[in-house]
Image (cartoon, rainbow, N blue to C red; front, top):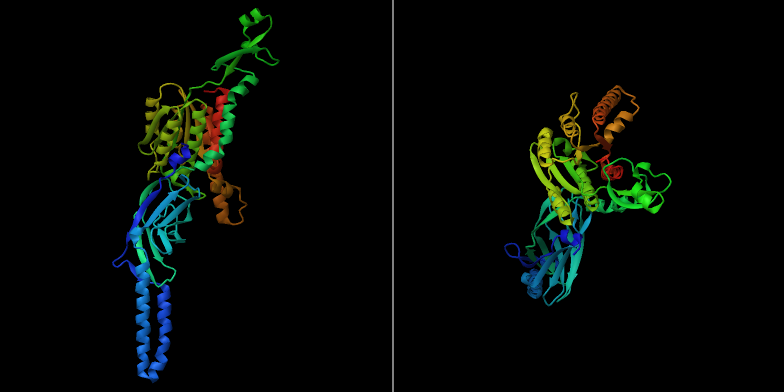
Length: 459
């Protein structure tokens, strides 16, 4: 069974039941025919007995409505199914299918309204379909989630008529269910090129000169022009009578920690999504690449306290666990406690590891606490500090002001950018690696940085 099918919500099926006090009403066509009967009003003003014509017309119409209502199948003869074809992912358009099975003896024309929460779709879905006697009909509508987490789908309401259209029944199908909105899985698929690149790490190591230490020995091969003399195996060379070089491979089984700031700064929205959403998508992409490369991946998410912690593990089941934890991440109303997060991380990870920190910087004249917290890790761990850039800030700083207000805005933006550069330079001086990138390119930038670290054996 594929991962996509496991994440896809299960189909929900239910027999319909009567909705409302009476569960039926006059159809639109019956009102039209009742209006036609009013033509008898004119002659009735001149000859009163023509009023009996109106009465006879209405009686015949009422009998026709009752006959139409009688032949309509009762609600319990109808079965409604809500079917999902794909996992529900943030900002990804997916289709939901409503199926109606007609167990009656006449064709029904149905209008169906699905109770969908606002975080999945702004408007209430409304579909129309025709189901012949003893058969099934289906119609689809689109959803595009704007929030991660669990969403409550409600019931399906339907009005249905026969082809006569004189009467209609009202029914309700109790197909309520909870669906989980995952991070942007489409973006993970788009990062497949990075998986291909990670597969080639060892091949690239064989073709490149291997400098430094910290690499795992793999095999021996004949010396090639450009090989480092320190990698020559002199004992093997003496036995074979020619120079033989040692071949190293990128170290596997290293530990990667993904640290996500869930404080108030991550509530800022860029192109309709919160910064935390971009951080979650990045963490998911990175985790898949790292786990495939043989590394162990851990997760630490925090605001004022540690909200989610997953110890480093390997394997596809661990990726699923990480995904489930990422789904539930929410931003807090206050500034995150970065120092507490560092304390938790240092207690959880004693050996040297790569810490990839996804956060943002507060605009303050003082040194943000997150900078001091990250610098506490640099003596023991390799820190990749990732800051989500502000595209509107860059645009404001680059504008050519023509009014005093625009000049003040541009000056303030330039000052903020310069202050950020000073803070980030301080981290570079303390051996931290930095990535400041636009939210849209965050996943690719972080994954590329991780692969570069693997190739250079910096960990």
